[in-house]
Image 1 (tube, rainbow, N blue to C red):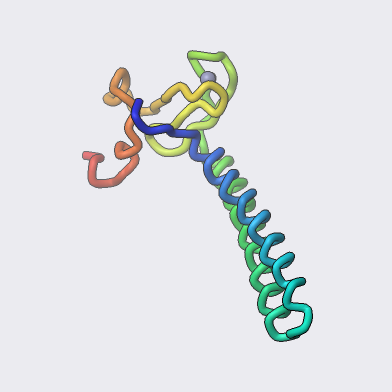
Image 2 (cartoon, helix red, strand yellow; image 1 turned 90 degrees about the horizontal axis):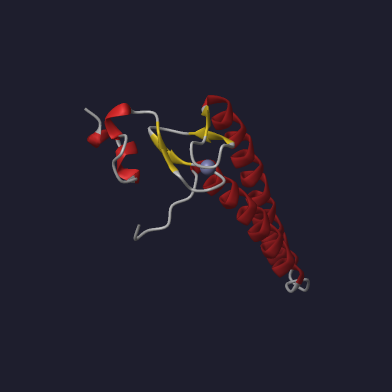
Length: 118
Ligand SMILES: [Zn+2]
């Protein structure tokens, strides 16, 4: 595999986590602008916005998780969740599919795009 893939839920989770860090970082930057109340407010608001956005993303993950199909990974035996037609095991990165037609084929994220579906 040339490209590294990770489970979609894990990917979104990483994104939400980085949003929190960015939010705190931006708020921290605002401290350097103490002399200017306007800029400090702007940074604080931006930071707060990032944190609010990440809360939203976490909520979205929760919604997605309820829709994801739970399967037992054939490779590591752990229970993992599949989003879309193809996804990866959250633990061992084994490619998993719900579509029998795609079984045995190399993992490719483009199978999730509508244009490929027939
Ligand atoms: Zn696995």
